[in-house]
Amino acid sequence: MTPEPRPGLLDIKPYRGGVSDAPGFEAPIKLSSNENCFGCSAAAKDAMANCAEQIERYPDGGVHRLRAALADKHDLDAERIVCGCGSDELLQLLGKAYLRDGDEVLLAQNGFLSYKLIALQNGAVPVAAPETEDLRIDAAAFLSKVTKRTRIVFLANPNNPTGYLMPGEEVRKLQAGLPENVLLVIDGAYAEFVKDEDYEGGFALVESCKNVVATRTFSKSYGLAGLRVGWAYCPKEVAAVLNRVRSPFNVNAMAQAAALAALDDTDFLQKSVDHVAHWAPKIEAEVKKLGLKAYPSAGNFVLIGLGSPEEADALEKFLVQRGLILRGMRGFGLPGFIRMTIGTDADNQAVLAALADFAAQ
Ligand SMILES: *Cc1c(COP(=O)(O)O)cnc(C)c1O
Image 1: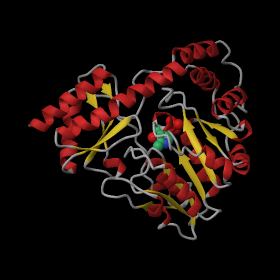
Image 2: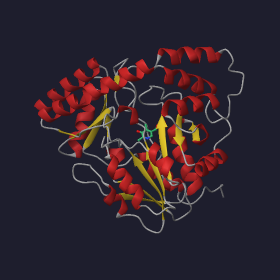
Image 3: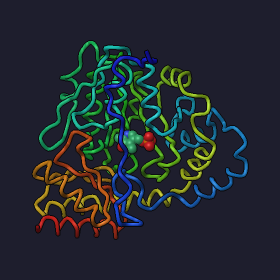
Image 4: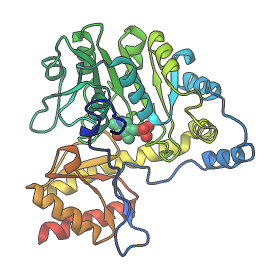
């Protein structure tokens, strides 16, 4: 006899992050995890170095300064901001707090991988809302899958890995169509990259509804993935729950200091956002010229469609042999696809050149 975990847990396939080495290359170009190609703000690095001087101290468990700065920047109520060890922790905690055995968790057919894991970890059933052939989704597609057992709807907007941005009107329609006891989680991991005027990142909905939570992260546009800082804007009842289930010091001192400094460095953020806005449509167009499929992306990555899963595998291998690491999408349930994080000018040119050689074979 051995200690037994809760039923179903061992059926979960552990999450596998993006690969980070290419045999034979000392410094391969890693474009597999949607990280920031410019690193992070220099001010954030200074803040970390300063913080190291007092690292024997426990962090502020209430994350007061960072929450106040976020509230100020986005014009929100600091009391209803909860910070986490990455936004992923907050998504996890929402699952832990709100899901019961047999509940259903609704996500887009090609939604973010974490959502499925969160459902399974909590004895719930992941239910996929159908996407169109060109990987779009609307409110009706989600609402058609709502049942009496639906407890949480996870919507990444923009979505990863498809890059699809659901128009604001559709997001509001989705909220309006959900029963009041269903939590709508709008995951804005790529919100800062969005140019659309009508973007519904969730903050306005959180103000007007009791069943919407909006999450954000410092991992992507701010380039602090390694530190793990994210946050959620919540109705006060949900914030009260999250503050009961999170661990007391879930955001470490260095992460708090760096995030605070990064928030102030608007130049770094603008540079990152402008770079992505420049490259995303360009990569999409170039990839299409080569006869491959590419999808319009509102994030810092582009999803590329090959003719078959075998071709996608071959392309992934071909690129690794050139020191270029992209993310094959087999693990995401999209075996004929590969995802490219937008890199520096040189990175992107190297990938486009390699794609052209691959297409010419
Ligand atoms: C990267 C990503 C996250 C996780 O971000 P962390 O804050 O680093 O945990 C959440 N959602 C989506 C859609 C992502 O792509």
